[in-house]
Length: 488
Image 1 (cartoon, rainbow, N blue to C red):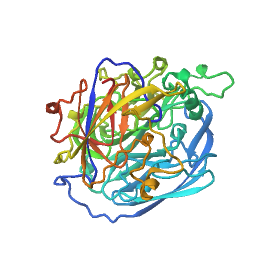
Image 2 (image 1 turned 180 degrees about the vertical axis):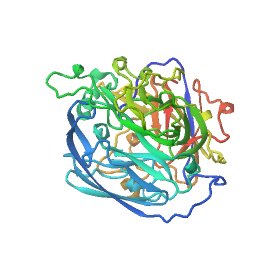
Image 3 (image 1 turned 90 degrees about the vertical axis):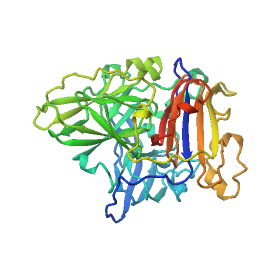
Image 4 (image 1 turned 180 degrees about the horizontal axis):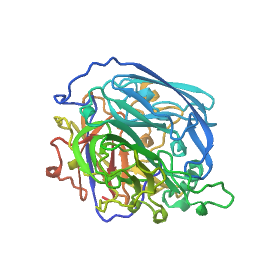
């Protein structure tokens, strides 16, 4: 992620995942095909800076078509997506479609230094790819420096004509959660990458739901422009209707607990994987994770609070000042201006870790293939030669080559000639199944995202020894973003 994490926990863990370097192996017995003719969908987006005040505090944001968050890209499984990007940010950029496999089109993954060169200012670039075997909740964002922290984000939804839950909900609602800074990310990054930061990430000033929240302007710097009570996001419910909420955490750094007062939720999707119904009150969601939940409007007609609570245990001490991020769930027929009652759920969830994977059971059973290779990746943090804290994988800190991306190097026949700081691991056998063990020596948790693939999450454990008997090899959940817990 943009800013890595350093916090204090007192237990050791191992994160174990299995990755298949091929198309997913799915049992489709529960899904009956519906007739659908794939279409070509064209989206024109212009990236430009605009002065906005999402929480009442006025600042310059990097936007998509002048909007924050950006416009939603919606297509159906099997469709072709064409994204025409015009860069007017005043600096280079790229766009990553987060969670897309990009099978056959890796050069459209949008990662500067890996899959493409940067798009220069005042230039255009077109991303053109299909989604033959994916459906679910995704997002798109800049993958250049820290631009997405300044606003270059939007939801990417792939509807499934074969959705097994299609008749179980009446409407869909996109809910985008994020932490939010009043200072431009370039300034924050420069300060962060100095010895004086000690590796402590910038603490956000606020959080937003669908680009809105209030802010206490008495805390704003002198001379800034700020308006109190700028307004919360509002979601309209009709009694007895069932809503599929597609929840996306687009933060730079923060994990949240998501909930709606007096309303239970049933998880049905995790990052493109359908799950068996799993009833919960509060949803832990880390950076870049996505869930679909079904919420039934079965409470008395009234206004209710939607909550996005910072998981402050995972953050520096200064985060204690942060308030709960709120939105309004308004039932049709309820008074428009009536303040919701404050009735949060009282159950406690352990912070800084994902929703328990053993409770997330895939809807369709899968045959877990045996691993053909094993990898162990140790996460450490050290000071570099200038005293700046850097992240290391197996004692190597990644440095992208912006002018000669990884894919260009491979196509040039130089796949076996990567410098050490590219952290290159080469798998040249199609269908290779790789077991990956992450050993986290840091005192903070870290969200881990894999481009181009999903992976099965087999388990977590204490210490540096893998207890294979404790691994879940029977129908484990498959996703593309998971939390590696702290220390060990």
